[in-house]
Length: 281
Picture 1 (tube, one colour):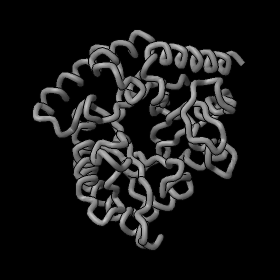
Picture 2 (cartoon, helix red, strand yellow):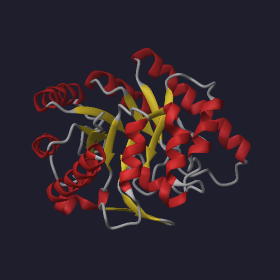
Picture 3 (spheres, helix red, strand yellow):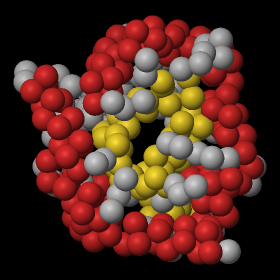
């Protein structure tokens, strides 16, 4: 089974959404990981309905599937990354954003909405932080149920939920909800996880909805082009193929925006070549 490769719009920060969808289709990508942001489908835009309808038509015209992401770092707070979080004293704005993302995902035909935890608030016990996070996720799951969209939670380096195991624990705290799954970032797992990378894939497998992929150096949270870090990708792709992963495997290189078309070109060529080698073997 061939994997389906996508590319994150946060790696095309200087392109209009309409233009970058055409570029990705021309390069042979199967889909797009669409980060809702001020310049790419702002969920608070006055003409949001028109923009969503137009984006849906363009996705269909280009034959691209989509997954909706909510990781824009300064979208809700110009001074603090990812604030407020679901663990903040006042998490309502984050909950509202995620609910809007679920509704947008449903209109675009995205089966999932990506989210992450952010950093734990200072001066709050770990037990209380888990309780707040589970309550916030539970509130968003109510909207997810109404629209049939799954939440794909990503363990993120140096956030409160930074490993697959902590993500699985959160899943238990929300009652093992059928619409709660995992986004596994291959670079992140290599960067901070104690178990080997392929073990992280195995542990996430039962609840794996989306995969993000890039190269990385252990202990350094910097998204690199393929071949510029330490990861051995053929075994990773083989593991994803073996478990029959049907979601997108999306390139996540935010720092490549100044040369986005060529970074995207090099990335798809690398991934397709690796996949071809695997299939040939």
